[in-house]
Every structure is written in C-alpha cells, then in structure tokens.
Length: 181
Image: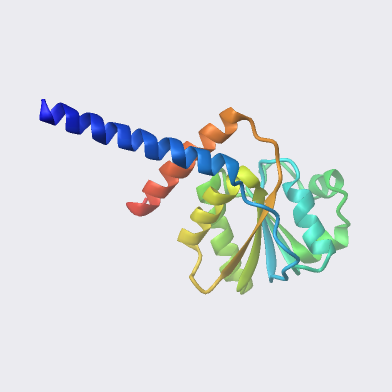
C-alpha cells in the first residue's frame, strides 16, 4: 500500500509541475526586442509577420544582412521579392534564402552554417512569440557560445491548442538536447 501511495504522490507531483509549467509558458510569451543592433537577423519561415519584421530590422539598419531559413525549394528569389516587396538590390546584397531546413532543428543547423560562413558574432532571431523558446533553444545547441543571440518575438494570438502543442514540442526538444539528440 505504501508503494501505491508513493507512486500516486510522484504522479501527482509530475502532473502539477507539468500544469504549472504550461501555465507559465502560456502567460509569459516572449516579447519583441528593443532597438539593438546585431550583425544579422535570422528568420525561420512558418508564421505570419516573421519575414516582415525581419525586413523592418534591415530597413531600420539594426542588422546588415538577413537569413530566411526554411524557404520552400520551389520559391524563387524573384517570387520572394515580389511577395514581400523587396527591392532586388537589397535581395542581392543582404538577404540569403536558405532552402535546406524543414523544421526548427534544421533551421538551427542551417543558421549555424550560415553564421560561420558569414563571420556573424551577433544575431537577432525573429520568430513568433510562442515558437521563440524552442527556436532559441535549438540555436543555443548549434551555435558557438561566442555568438550573441537577441530574441525578437513577433506577437501573435495563439490558440490554446497551438500553445498546448508547442509546449510539448518544447519539452521534447529540451529532453532531446539533454540527451544529445
């Protein structure tokens, strides 16, 4: 009987920690960054407002170049420029479209390779508020410690279902990183 009581207590504690963690995750979403200058801005595709906010960072002179990671391989630079009203000169000089990433983990890998190739020592990560913690965590595991990352969240109105799913992805990402995966 004592074993069952102990098991129930452990399960109750795990559920309580999970519930409190979800509550903290849902009510304290990351915010947009201040006007900090970095070498580059990194924008993973996937959420509304991300690319526009990244382009605003370039326009305001807060970064000199931008990587858009996870671009669909069927998208041409001309289509990208037309969709986001990007001047071709800006696209040629300052924006790299990354086509190899397919998820958050591969966004981090693609970003780390680009950062090394371009000698970036500071970057601004622009992604949706609910996605920021996981994206930043994956980046932290792939970038050298010497690269400064400024988190610049795009505000959103996520559904409870979206938050629930992202919270569990964050937990899975944390444990994958903990065990070296």
